[in-house]
Length: 84
Image (cartoon, rainbow, N blue to C red; front, side, top):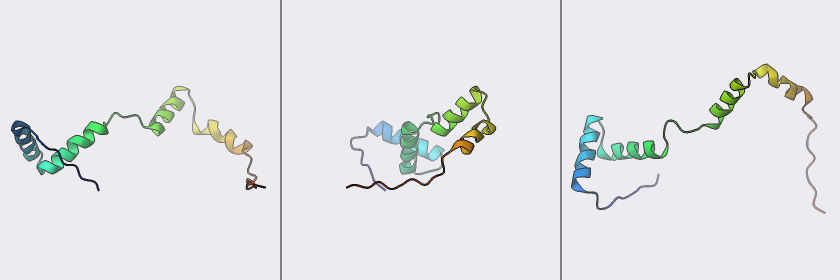
């Protein structure tokens, strides 16, 4: 796992990080990892599967509406390409 070094952190910021870490019962390093993760991966980020499911619900579609795709799908194995 990569590591990051942050230089020239002001004393009051370092102190606040240590206090915050103690309040959460973890090390300052673990607290910083949590802060960074929350900053770059917010809980409200768009997840494709959730977005597609919501779109289907809004359109009034159910799993039964997609059975037609299984019925008409060409199941013939694909032929490999040849380069001559």
